[in-house]
Image (cartoon, rainbow, N blue to C red; front, side, top):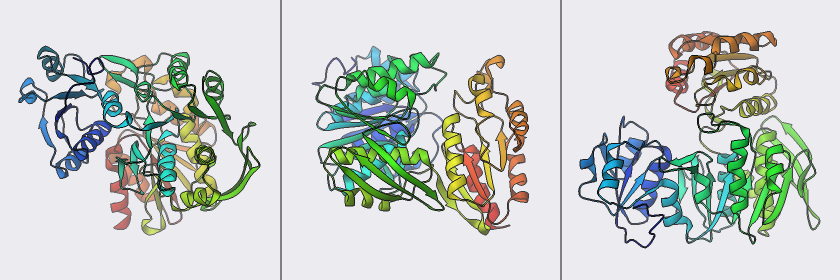
Length: 475
């Protein structure tokens, strides 16, 4: 039985199918810390999640089979990578075990007793969520949270917290094989930050309208006594925010907004900006985060702080002490005077924004853009022409062949070779590489002191960052 139909069951033991996924592994640790007996299963178990769970003494069975459900757990949590015919999923249903999705479990065990604060949007939701968590922490509100990245201030991606607020990164991806709706619909936000709405996830959304329909459901799910904080600069977020039944607060850098930037100076290593808002609110801040996109994320945090009645000193302390999120413009090292940055950017808008930010942040230095199209959208032709236009801020562009193209029909695949040709036509030096083994020596032979290497991928990029750091150290 799906526990969405029966929330009154007594639970002590929880089994997670697909436990090594980022969200599922984090949920397992949260449940264990909350006092539950936790175990799980997965296939192709490997670090870092396997070692993370092992360090918590959480038992993992490798491979999926009905026997993994013995002895029967009180609850089975099914990850969204699990398909209907998975032997453990089939066994859970046939045995009449209570089961649910990860978002359902998160709501039942952690969001039910808190005010849910959801950071959602096509771009920026991880950094925004982490900023909101750190604001509430600096303000001594002891928040709980689940964020889709490792927060450097805590060296983990979750907090149980005992305060009134629980911050969760709201993902629009589908929930489970038995629930194809977006994950964020289970989080029932009292407060929601909407950063942006663009086309993405081409494997589950056929077009932009389908994406907007999903976000519209989120916006209209906020209760009348809730709060929506929306980005006035983003056309999609601005348009959908008008559907809200609750109070709306807008923020913006260009468009008229209630919380707005009056002045911004992007310098080397810092961003200075002035903010104005309701009730005569005016303040000046310094931020260590690079670029207009991060300033926009920061502005949403300022808007929440203003709504909660927090003073400007708390906001500035939040910015001064915020250490960022792993793989979001994360400086991994500076061997031999070369700055190596690991970043998660993959959507064309995010790639362009990140490059433009680093161009100003590292003014006067040669900027390499090293990109692996890895997501289900970026591997498809849907962004073929758009990608060609987003690398203009780079001095040198390296594109790796997308992995796993075999699962995509040939006519739907992104052509990395054509992309390199199109970038070159715009006057930017660009090179194609079929694999990391040929890309690595090119970088090693060409990088020199003062260069900035921006590595962008949603995956491991075949450990390119670690290989580069080791190679440059020993060069």
